[in-house]
Image (cartoon, rainbow, N blue to C red; front, side, top):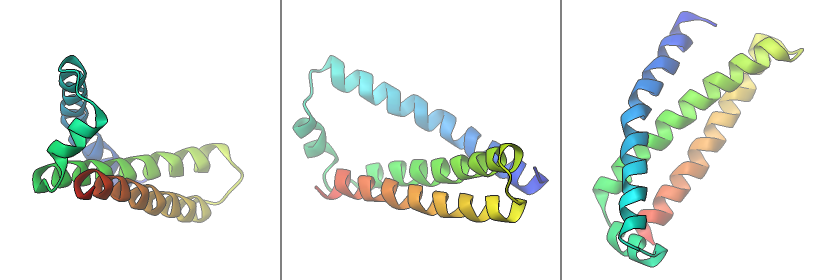
Length: 109
C-alpha cells in the first residue's frame, strides 16, 4: 500500500470514529424514546446540520471503504494495482452516490 493511501485510510477512520459514536447514540436515544421512522424524518426534514453530518460521514466511509477494497483486490485477486485502483474508484463513487442519495432522502423527505 502506498503511504498516501495509508494516511487517507487512517484519517478517514479517525474521522469516522466519533461519527459512528454519535450515530449509535442517536439510535439508542430514538429507540428509548419510542420514536417511529415518521418521527425521526419529521425532525431531520430540512436540517442543514444533519445533512452536513451525514454528508461528511458518507464521504469518509466511501473513501475509507474504497481504499480497503483496493488493498484487498491488489493482495488477493490476480489483478494489477492499476485495475484494482480503477475498480476501487468506481466502487467509491457508487458508494458515495448511494449514500448521498440516502442523506437527501433523510433531509429532503
